[in-house]
Image (cartoon, rainbow, N blue to C red; front, side, top):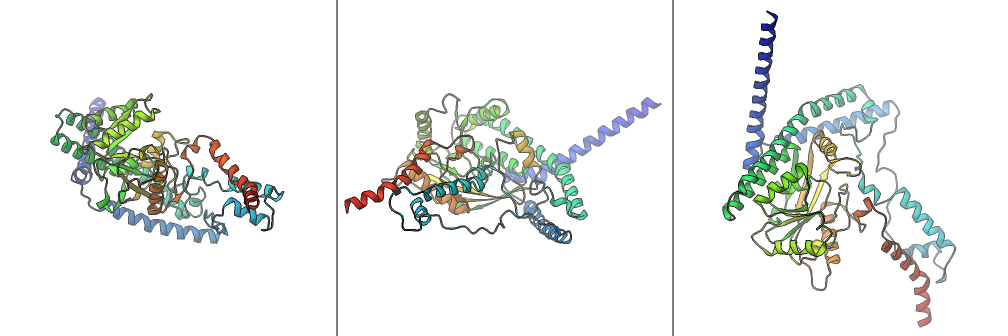
Length: 452
């Protein structure tokens, strides 16, 4: 008798699980996958975003009120009372330090200038802070903002707990399912498209498959993306360059247009995806031994852009992820090709989730878990007018001009520092440059006086 009851219970559980999975995948198919195929949206994500904004505003007000009641001081990262001054040249600052009447020779007060600059660099290093998560002025019900915020009141603590249940109990399983669906379809469908002979039909199917799969992956992150100036979208035979914050930058851009990817050949799951993608579309993958061969890389890129039937190349010239507060030095390689460059600025809204990938702190799996357990990924993308190298302009100058345009459009700080400082030391060239500037203060003025 007990065996029959156990069997019936087991059968009932299996039936309930089957019904649950059927309902689950039906809802995914109707509300997410099918709209992704046709590139339409029901507006659910934007409504969700507006609701979150109102929730954050209420939580912030409640937090400030609770802090006043307890006479607590809330940490506000940008309210330090420091007023930024216009940057001066080294020569101007030293002249100010010498009170304007110094002779063109070494002065003991010069030591204090370099000591002050050294302390300023330690206290407010404009490079190192670009490789850590951007601090928020208000709480977004995620512990990354400030670990003390959710302990201010019982209401906020309860709200934070409900948020954890929603994010990990509902959103995370939903997003993981969508991510596996998108990646699985990408591998299977690109492999099938790869069986077609080269021609218009293959290119058409490849574009549709890539767009569909990337749009499903975008929905796996609950990404709300606003695209601006789409008339400037990259065209075949060109190179698209963008600022780099996260690996998902690729998905953000590829869900609105098709690109040829550039990267190193990997093993494992990423390698499977790369091999499947290249069957359907001419992406550019390099072996580990080829990456450092600049001439080979330049030739592969030049051959690709010379064929106007091939998709535009997508490149992130910074070479590393920056925390979306600035744009750092662009590597000059992609600007030496001599083709049209299509700049793109990407700006994330950190209130809903931090898109920055700190690769020295988080592995890829931990990072993706962090992303999929956040509220949403909200960002704006600006397509800038195409730019070409001007007469007499070298690759470095061209790269800096493009970088400045991206920084200006995205509201980001334009920095001259190399993103390689994330893991390496300052190059001797930068030290020598500062030494030359100081030498001009000591020697330059003396030479001018002797000439006169």
